[in-house]
Image (cartoon, rainbow, N blue to C red; front, side, top):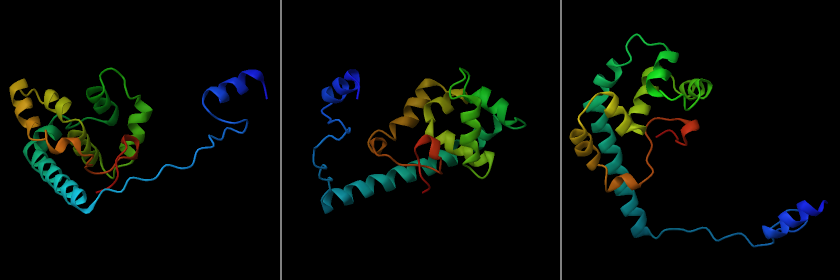
Length: 151
């Protein structure tokens, strides 16, 4: 083992094999009361997402009528991030482009409402509904590339 590798391992608290030597951390298990509170927040968030989709999905999908995937990418990602290939991979995780666009609408509410040319006051009003439950990680649809799972 080179001196450089040995020094780097030592600095990170590892031995020559890269092992930390620490015992595994005990997994945190919330109590029953906290689980009930969390599940209520998750349900509230899902309801708000459903209401959000009902209110905005038709207008949102009209923005992309007649667009192919590349044109959709240019509209959603004007600065080229994520790359076109990463965008295609994300779209492939959904059965249809409509499902992907609905997922994107919910995952990127603020940006989506800006693309729909809503006033900033309307956007703030709409997003204020998510203030309390918005701190909970809730997904809509599926998308492995964006760290979500199927509901």
